Structure formats: structure tokens, C-alpha cells
Image 1 (cartoon, rainbow, N blue to C red):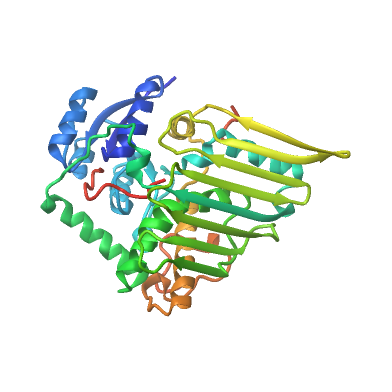
Image 2 (image 1 turned 60 degrees about the horizontal axis):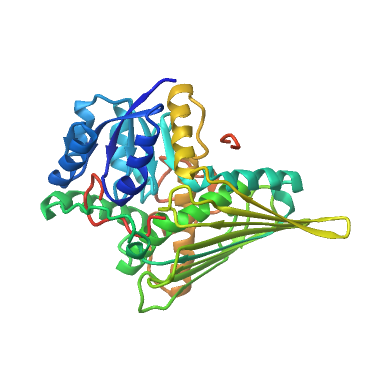
Length: 404
């Protein structure tokens, strides 16, 4: 089997706890050829352990080359780095968010781009797709309900002993300034709290729920209600509801709560349909090979039957296998440029609805709510308008929070 040489941009928690261990496990598929982090010492430590060149500037690493694909694990918006990698002919696996604004994606070619939503590759998620098809497809869904209880990342990572990167402020500044410009393009000069809600909650965490909704039923058709509380706390609680898209006539509801001292990460997504229910319970994503539980409830004659499915196959590893097939066989990923753009548009519709409800001025791409199905938006649009099989980053600023 062809081995793909990869560069790693961003050596924070996700790289140390998830990607580097899995890449070492799957030496049959990948060989790490270079690593990068704005903290030079941190990059050199990781590079020395991996036996590969280390860089403190991602563009320098791209120009030096020696690899065919790039895995982007940096905090903040990934748009500029992904663009640079694609322009050099590399295949790219990019963790979310792909970008903060649609303007950043103008002129993008998505032919070699895969967006990283590992929960789409979870065996339980894949089995749910099959079970939903067996029940009649998305059109039978009456309601999709999602709840996330998000403790602090520190509490989730007490076991991991990850080494933090500490890049100098002058190394971080250009990337932080680029992020601010992207947020201004998306939201205008809105409140700092609204900008953080959009970037740190909607695009950096709730995007997982949006990606699963998109996988199961298609992206939401409407955003009818958004509530954010308490006003004096950040990250807050967030509630979103509306109608599902595609052929589905049902509704969805998402409740996302940041509870720093909650005992454990908790995510449940349930689809109620005309013939029963399908429920997913996800563990903390940092616990590799911890199974997601799928519970299928249906009726057989006069009997209520409940079937529980658990599979210890790791979702991140399955995502890496899909990336390998994408590079070597050009098998399309579950989420490419179009899907990632749909999630950005849905996030903008959510923040637009909340700003209207709260009386907060908003501009940029969100000044006018997107109408129609978000999948109609295309990269490069005028910014003023609207299967997988069954079985600290290079940008170096503050460690990506709320990443799962």
C-alpha cells in the first residue's frame, strides 16, 4: 500500500494526543516528514522525537517540501495556510474551522481538500446512516435533538500530559491580526463577545453538530430561534432551533453548554422518526478508541426492541484512512470545500439571528441573513450578499479552545 509523506502544521494538544500517536500507529499509510510550530523549541523537540525536520514558520516548511500532504492543526482560521498548501499542489486534511469568513475561500480549489470532521467517520455515525436508510430515509425524521455538555479542556486532558507551546508574542501577532481581519469580513465591527461566540463556539465546537446534521439529513433549512445565556459568562450556553433541510420536513434543536467543572464530556444526538429513535452518545474525543454508543429503538410486532451498537474502531483513525484513500485513490471525502462552506454559512445564519434578537449591530457577510438552503452558497461569492466503509499550532497563538 502506498505510503503518503505528510507535514504537520501545529503541534498543540490535538497533534500530541491524537494525530501523532495515530500516525505512528498507521506507518503502513503515512510517514511524518516534517513538523512545524511557531514555538521553535517545541517544534524541535517534537521533530527530534519523530526524526524529521522541524520548522517555526509554516510557509518555510511548505517551500522546503519533502512531503505530499499537509495536516493542518493550527488554532484560528486555517484559510490562508490551506490556500498556500493547495497552491503548492499538496493534498490537505484541515481540522475545522476551515475559515472564519467566506471571503477567505474566494477562488479556492477544493479538489485536494478534505475538512476534518472525525465524528462523521465514527462507526456509530456510519451505522446510524444505514439504520436511517432502513427506516425510510431522512424524510421520515420528525425531530433531531442534540445536547452537548462541555467541561474545560484542562479537565478533559488531565491524563494526557501534553506539552504546551509558548511562541513569542511577535511570532503570534501576524496570525492573530489575520484572524481579526477575517472576523471583520464575516461580522463587521461587531461586539467582541459576538466575534468570540462565532469563532470559539459556533465554528470551533458546534460545527461538529452541524456536520452531523449535514451528514444525516442535509444542512438546516432555517434558523428560527437562537438564545445565548448567561450574559455575564463566556463561554455561555447556546440554544438553536429551526427546520431541517433536504427532503426532511422535521425540525432540529441544539443545546450547547460550557460547564467547566462538569464531570465528563457529554454529547447526545437523537433522531426521532416515524418508526422509532436513533441515539448517539459520544465520549470525550481525546480518549482514543473509546466507543460511541448507538441505540436503535424500534417495534417488532407488539415488542419494543432496543439494539445497542458499540465499536472500538477510532473515528480519527478512520478519518486518516479516508484521507489516505483520498490522496492515493482520489476517493472523495465526506466533507470537502462545499460541506465546510455550508457549515460556515449555517454558523453565520445563527449569529445573524442571535444579533437580531439581542439588538446587537452586525455587518460584513452576516449583515443580511442567507436565504434558501445554505448549500446554495459558493466559495468566492460576493461577500456582501448572501462512506466510508462500515467496519498549539503552526499559527502558534493561544491553544485552540473548545476544539471538540
